[in-house]
Length: 72
Image (tube, rainbow, N blue to C red; front, top):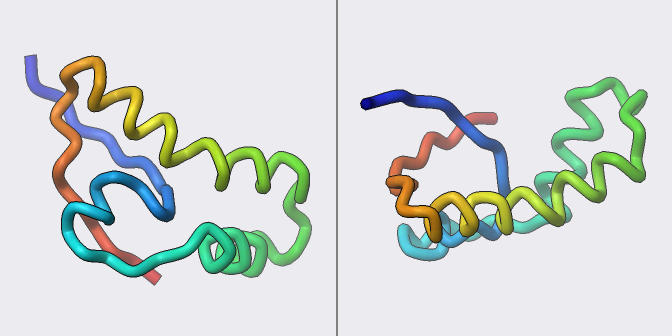
């Protein structure tokens, strides 16, 4: 079975492998701005901090996580 999807994260293992210099703070700030500063900030902090862990978990399960798209 083949499927595709996308996830947003900063400081992920994929970015590290590909030499992408990104930060959780920058990701937080950009997401806050794109949400018109109406985001739930506590939820956003949780998401930003846990997104790279979720990517690592998927990879640990054997899911191929090696493609990177840069936007913004």
